[in-house]
Image (cartoon, rainbow, N blue to C red):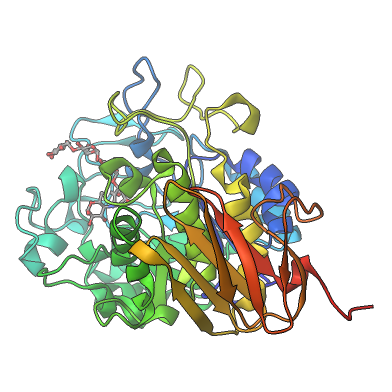
Length: 465
Ligand code: QV4
């Protein structure tokens, strides 16, 4: 399948708060074999220790840097390097979450995860060494998202805002990104990109050496009516298209037939520059999108993510939390000093939803059909059962209703016997078979809330030897 060096338009798995050791093992056993091109990891730099409550420190200490040492609650520098190499060997590149807009929000002096002593606007480094002159003048919270200057110069939730217009700051950040490149990363998710002028990011990129050749995707949360939009950032990489996940939530809670023309929606970034996902760690908490809590609808949305041609698809996998029980703040399971424990899919703490056939089995399908177009769109009564094809290689039925549905669909598939890619736990099994006739028609029964995916690579075509 694709190699880590292919940029963009590749399947990504975003592994929120997984340790480096557990990602390495998962690359070998699951992620590489499934065909993912990249894993996006949580921020690897030194962060605040935070207050260790009954449930340990909150997850978001990851987003409060105190230096650019690659030492964190998710693992050591050596473990990070081993993960990168192990994943590479499995054909998977690592995308690092780069928190470069700000340092911590702590105003009291403290000691970071790797021992760095800091105080407000004083971070001795050596990696990520900053003093008061390296921060923006506005020391107050962002108050008006309608004001570009405010959004890019004031503090995002109190986080000390780096003066990314300065040559020195740009070089420190560039050195950090190059350090990650020296460890072998394949790309970067630029955290809070909207809070830095796009021209500053272009300047940072031009100051890097190895990092400039890697994949960059910017977290720019586009909201209608705001002055700063994702399209501005395309000079230094792709941008995330948050309207994609929002649109999916609306459709799966309404009528999925509305998704037919999503790729031509003028309000969205052009697909080849857009990073898209059903959810990420912020949106699963703020309920801006579907999340694993939505059960079948979430899995159906992931089938759509990997089968409808728009954007670079990123599946998401994190740990279980309850909205009602401080879900925004709890951390992943940790030891007594706050080191995150390795994920074990058997113990139920991490969702491991990426192992479900709707994600794991769909990556190969995505890689195989990517050169084909969308065809044979069919909507059944009510708009919540749709079928659509990908060239002559694939056909998908999504049943977003509470009842089983039977229908004869028109496809462009070659005649033959096809396994439902989604019914099989692994692609060597065939638990459910459908027969495509010489005219391409196929009689499909899709269970309530389930999908059927037919793929030439998972079929016995009539006439094949
Ligand atoms: C608190 C008060 C502030 C006060 C400050 C003083 O709320 O009013 O000024 O203390 O110290 C945590 C707490 C937050 C706290 C802050 C600073 O939740 O209450 O401020 O720390 O101590 C994550 C979490 C945040 C968390 C932050 C830092 O989501 O809750 O803040 O990490 O630990 C916008 C942006 C977008 C951003 C999104 C969340 O445009 O870029 O908000 N998304 C990314 C990440 C996100 C991360 C950050 C950016 C920050 O995806 O996870 O925030 O790096 O939409």
